Length: 457
Image (cartoon, rainbow, N blue to C red; front, top):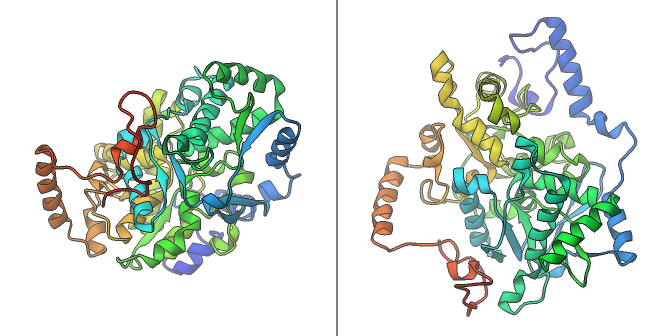
């Protein structure tokens, strides 16, 4: 990165024509720079065109006509209002949350969901982490083309119906728990399905037949959520409360943020923008949290690029994914931004940017950069154990140097974790959440004697 540019310039201004990536000619760089500044930074790509419909308007009309039931966010959820791209209000529930977990997180990045729930425990947030949830099936759709819109929409509404009814297991009114979606792909997929359902009577009828057979209708009607909420949106509106509990100084860190395509490029009108975050020119989630914690958020020229995952790329063109992740994202963050860490908010992005770094060694492209989710970083800043809770040892990118810069003794923490594993082997375990509360029906269900709040440390 050009040393003449200050960090504040690189963080908030567009990359000017005087600076360019070394692999571009001056003409190419000027063209690329103009595109980034005009079409992305100012969002004229969206805001200079006719605005799309707020799909919630159609949703309220269908409910008024008696075709659907809307799962509302109310005082039980203590909502905070955020603003989306066009200035529309989006109410983000902050408590009584139903954890819609991610298959990829639970399988590849377990520190991701554990960090979310640990943060909620620290903040005294009520939630339900039950077992009666399925994958969104978007892998079938995006990855192989096997899935179809009817199956995607049916699974979407099946999961959200379970969230709506789940409180009955505790003797609470239906609708007490509102879904909080952990996975960015599920988030984007569900938003698209809601639009399709609102516009297509035929699709509603097809899905209604399926859910009727499963007993997943409310008064014979489809249940539609008032909002579809991503965990990073919860972090964003809770960021100042999180900051109050911060115990680790992160101000020395240079952080880059990778915004996930499925979070903010799919149904972009629903995404949160905040005038206090990058002057309102970038999606606010993750960046706003990092700024609230005091980290230096540094811009870089390929911030808009996909991580390289692309679903079908990772299946059929894996070398494309690897080269894109290294050359277009990791290398740029290291060389331009001199980043200490890259922060993301989606399962596939974290996996791709983190676990593909090893392949660079084969071609002498070693750009070691710690990669983690915003929730993991926030948990570290609040004093969470880097192995036991943030579970950084599941990551392929090196994190020890980052911990040292934060003043965290990773060797001591590793020894503590190894001792903890011996305790686990001996049957002495700790949990973030009472496992009996996770089962809300069927064999093994025992009605809890206490209300949920998140159990262990």
